[in-house]
Image 1 (cartoon, rainbow, N blue to C red):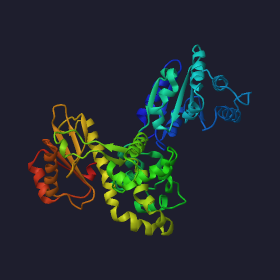
Image 2 (image 1 turned 45 degrees about the vertical axis):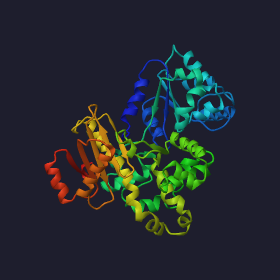
Image 3 (image 1 turned 180 degrees about the horizontal axis):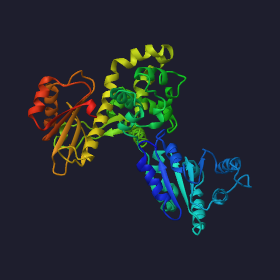
Image 4 (image 1 turned 180 degrees about the vertical axis):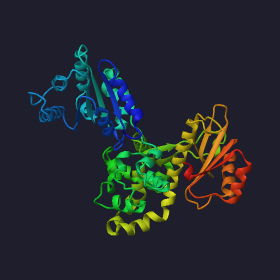
Length: 455
């Protein structure tokens, strides 16, 4: 069974089991596993798959007609119409048919009447076995911001939308059983919860070996994928690359990006909005507390791990990447601050762990809101609150060889800046705790020390 995707499979089967015909939209970013999910779903069903091209409507029908003939489905016309194609696909089946159109936005962009003709076909078969039409797309921004306007009244015929999201850190651990948990965190910081990228790593190798062989090597798929993810979805890639490089270098506020790029603030805002819609960048919002005057505002962060890795290490050092050996490049440009890079993703891992504990009722509170607090003089990595206002805060340590009592005092000081009462404190570390902190945890029931092995 497809690891980590049972809810999505159940969702698809729920619609398949309904009487009549339905149209579903399934979407998510590249490599997220849409096609693998669909293959698993179609395993025991009568189905047909077509990958739509970026071309004219006439060429689309010509290509689809050719594919049908290659699949030994009778279609007489060189340029069939939508009704001809769906009739040919469904004609021989008495059971419900699954018809998948991948990258369907290419059909709709080329010809706005495609959906109308599809709907008319489904309505004409109401007295026969139904069909489940699954429209897939890798264009998140188009589906969420443009699709409904483009489809018009036809959008009312869509039965459901399913967004395929990133898998969790726990799924990464299951995928790489021979990695130590620290190596899984490092893998997650590079490939994220994107299963299509996981295939490029080998848990029989070290993380350094995987980076050198499977990312820094120009002959490998991942070498240019970080840039390709941006280039395939956006025009004016030179502008987007400039902004992403600025953010990756630590210029995370609008004014910092403005001073670095010399683009107008209005222009930067528009491009950042597009990057956010594509889920490549996020705008960081601090958890709302009484200490609003002490919180930073307007911070941007790259959220696609491979894009982040590419613009942090490869893009700014491209000349060296082509002149040094992969080992020399790793030792000079990646190794010195790789722990710092991973630390932000370790915070995500800890947050997921806290959410899982919350779901299972294994926390002293049942929180319904959570996030982080980014202060002007300090940050609270984890902050969660229940409906009664009881608050849990947390710190995540990846870089330091030991989390100390002074670090504990620091997070309490940050809580004062945020003007919150910390009812419970969770401290996560990838290393160890000092003796004073261990003793404090024994006498303070609201202080919990979490080792990476606890995750």
